[in-house]
Image: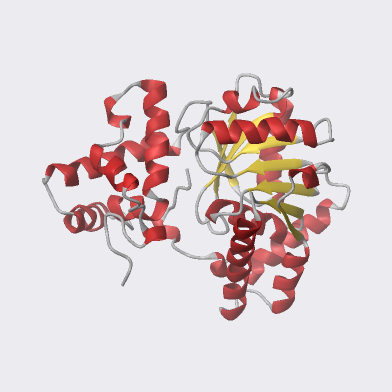
Length: 319
């Protein structure tokens, strides 16, 4: 899930020039012979663009793929705007920005991923869509020991691995939003993921991208969302029942529990469609009522009220 930590409500502009320099120094030290020199990112939405930016800042050759030209153009604009904010905020120089952009290529052709060492899928939380992508990657990527990773937070890695002829090389690498700021990544091996793949994925995330890792078994929700999603759904049910209004629910958790953001605003930030997809995946696996998406959440998704990205969710952002 494109989970957002409200403490980190920052853009990539908040990544300091020192962090950029450190990442690039580490990449230079690793040398051009690094086994992780070429990264492919499938999807250039909020998460995909963040992953691509972090990787390019770390000195990798990054190819980004979107489904069509309009989506690709929007993704390129999102990424460039993030870097431009960093320049305006004095967090990186124009030379830093230009160097990052020079490491990025954009394409709609999955065939351009043939030479990639690592590919990270970051598309919508749709099992069939993701499985189709992994099946296509299996036919395209020529490196025999390439790592195929998914940024999913709810879909079993095993199912994605079985869409390929090399499930031992498929692993979950789950980032958190905003990717340039959030330090955490969940590494999720399936029952068939080779230990070498898991170790290599962790080394890539910590050594090349400078993130911190926790490991999870391959179960829907992994570690963080298994704890977070029931809490968010409980807040939706409280609102749905009329027990309290949205502002009071959110203020209660901010002022009473020192949470930096209330649960309903966090739902809006993550996206109600994403919350629904993750909840459905978790409920399908565990059949626990606390994972079942409440009717109010389902109706709001049906109505296109998805949170901040549409201007309205549990709160109104159109003003």
